[in-house]
Amino acid sequence: MELTTFWFAVIAFLWTGYFVLEGFDFGVGLLVPALSRNEAERKQVLGTIGPVWDGNEVWLITAVGAMFAAFPAWYAGLLSGFYLPIALVLVGLIVRGIGLEWRGKVHRPSNRAWCDLGIFVGSALPAFLWGAIFAHLLRGSMTAALVGGVFSLSLCVLHGAVFVALKASGPVRVRARRAAMTASVVALPAAVVALSAIPAGGEAFGRAATPWLWASALASVAALSAGTALTWRGRDGWAFAATASSVALGSAALFGTLWSAPLPGLTVAEAASGPYTLGMLTWIGLIALPFVLGYQIWSYWVFRKRLVAEPS
Image (cartoon, rainbow, N blue to C red; front, side, top):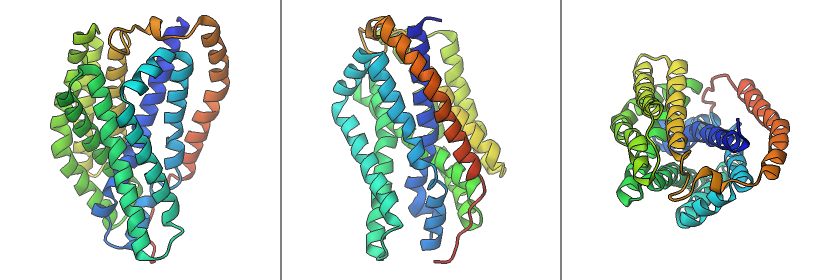
């Protein structure tokens, strides 16, 4: 395998990990008002992502850093071409982080309400904008961006609701299942439109729609449908595996389409760094990535148990 191909695959893997992991905690942040009726339940909902949300953001930092080093032209074109929406994503992540960190340190209900608002807005902005950014990158229109944003936002809500159902207990768990079923009313039709447009839309910019891209997009829709059905049956673990698989398969279709031209008029070879830089990055990646993956697996294993609402 050529180093250019290897590093494109690594970057696609890092973005996929970010979408899967941050996807559910964006959804949890959006669902706090709907799933909780009192302070104890709000703490229970937020506790499902409390130990992992900041670690999930490492995937974004690593993905963008790898793009900067391995594909500087792609990095520059993407971040400058979508400067405003990416700036809003960063604002959302900052506001969300402040809300999550400060909520446990304030005691007045009004201050906690401001933190909750920051968590909600800070989750909604990146959940919508990442879908809009990549949809516009593929199709080059505001309509596509709107459809992509609605799809990614509704998918995050569904993915987050399934995660809360997996991690929580009591009334919150019941409400999370209901929220997942409600979110599926929007997420499933949006998935059919958005995911089918990924391989089809790439042809307008010289990106070949190979059969495996269509298979990946269709499998993503099927996995999302399966996740909804499994939630309805109360199989929370399998439902979360299905929604996570749907996100991963959709990401595979996205980056598979971008492989031939990550930006309009720019091939992967033209966007890549020189062989020496890619060779050095390979050695660094082979040393660092196992530690990142090991930490993530360990943290999820340690905090694997369900949470119960404790009296305030």
